[in-house]
Length: 210
Image (cartoon, rainbow, N blue to C red; front, side, top):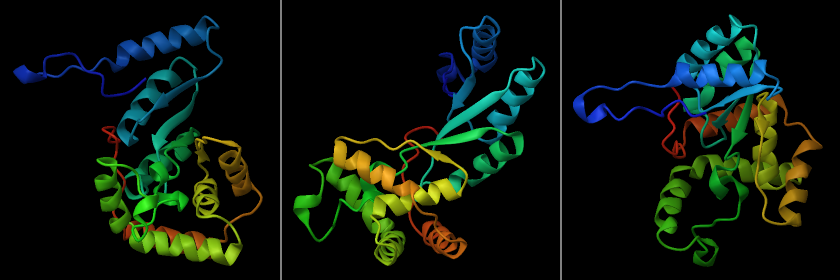
């Protein structure tokens, strides 16, 4: 369930969300035993507090909130993670590698590594904006003997968030699993936090957290 599904009144200056209607449906599914758990997607601090309050009155736990969260989508997601932690809701991170930005696969100095046009234009913008962060990720990866993707995924784990990285082949899957056999130190996490906060954020994909 996405929080920005709205009825078509916006052109007339009106906007009515269907949140409560969807929540009633989710609660009904849970109460009928059709779902073992209830989770939401792309809920920010305000929305997650609202849905938590509604479901708490029904004694139904909200177990997860899936959001765009990574080293290139950190600043705008911090408050949401904090609120979810406060309410006992696990955060799931989609785009944990920022659509490949954090995987180390793209290199501005190597045109052959870049995606095809027109995606190459957007990727170039993000790679340039994330330069300080990518430098830090590469440095820690080299120090650790790990890949950039493994460092980026482990950073998410250290934040108490559950990453859900994609993979296109067995090599990607193996690399993803390699993110779980070590722990970044507090000092390394702080280095990455600082670099992230000084870099351009990845697109919200149209789902700003509210």
